[in-house]
Length: 168
Image (cartoon, rainbow, N blue to C red; front, side):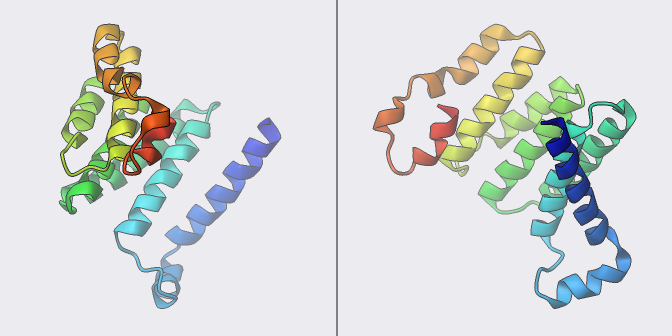
């Protein structure tokens, strides 16, 4: 398992370096990938997961997670349309939780629980918020957060709620 993880990290780091090279910006834009919110979001997730995979160097882990948080916050600050804002705030909260900044993470998770978020996003938000509350030893709050998920019958989900099955 560890060898496979190292290989995956090496591949992701190589791809990240490629996207960060200034001489590649024009080429990437030329082939139509663009450098908009999608790329920023993908680079944020790359930094996030590289941070999670970094188990030996706490400084490097923190640096990766902080970079992810900055990217996600940048997207949230651009005030994207409804559902995308919820996804950005979810990502900010996840990075903050992994950095041990639980009150900030909880605030972003709560702000992301919006009416315009998809059922899948709401389910994921509840799950991630409960993880944060558990790490903060707020067990009763975590139970309350998870209750709407636990009360759903996975076999009776509407088609709109079906993607949220992973969190139910």
